[in-house]
Amino acid sequence: MPPMPRVAVATMASYLPTDPDVDTPLLLPAFARAGIAADAVPWRSQADWAAYDLVLVRSTWDYPQHAGEFDAWLTRVASVTRLVNSPGTIRWNLDKRYLSDLAEAGIAVVPTVFHDDAAALGADLATRSGGVVVKPTVSAGSMDTGLFDAADPGAPTLGERILRRGGTVMLQPEVPELSEGAERSVYVIGGEPTHTIAKGALLERGGTLIGGVYQEHPEIVTATHAEAALAARTLEAVAAVTGEPAPLYARIDLVTSAQHGVVVLEAELIEPALNVNLAPHAAQAFVRAVAELLV
Image 1 (spheres, helix red, strand yellow):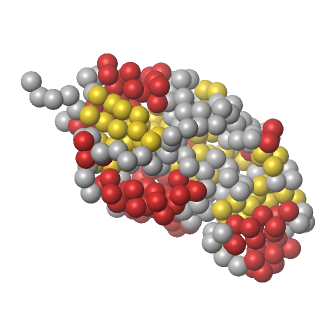
Image 2: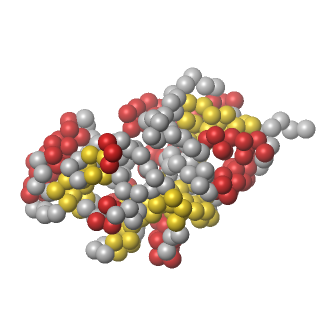
Image 3: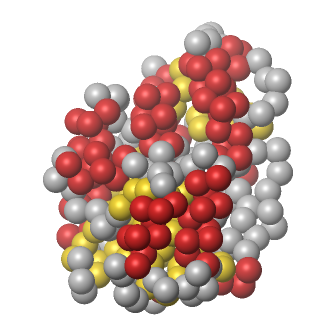
């Protein structure tokens, strides 16, 4: 009898109580039921990654604080086993300047300007009215992300802090529908859409998170035809732009807005929470898709 396949689910060592990993405790028994041995392994540990047939990047949510280490980890793991999603896809997705690639490929994205210079950022802000969102191109969990009035001195202050750390600043107009909780996250696993969630509004005007901490309030919703179609086109564009295999899993964040229409906010191909606690069938779809890779 052939040995049972072994899979590592790459995680963090610990999580905030307000932002737990709800997926891994449900995925591990789902793998076991499918005859696959799966371990939750902190990505920064000294694990023997070569002992696994496949390593799944799942809840490595602290990678922006350890960007160089994460890049080296991708190289190290991919040299001894198979890493999913692929290192090429992950590296492309690490920096949100990928939105420019998607826009050039014909995907409607939220209007975004990138700045590497404080003076240019200040000049841009001076031309704007209404609300703006300032954030770094490499981040997770809304780290260093703020919603401001364009004239609020907090906007350039946050931008300058990002620049001092060696980052690039993203500047976007406020999309009022996001503040109303209208963001949709469309999940695609194994090439098939599985479920859609709304996670609620996260940003409070003035540069803070609602409630002072990052905390999603996900609930299952139904994507519109236009939202589902844009998610599918986005993944086609990802494959065309990167030349990489189709992602095993993806979360496409969208909003249907009065001003911009249906636009992509983010294509999360690294470590999106799947929210399988709300969509148990998605756990089964995820395990099936992994099993097909192990054949």
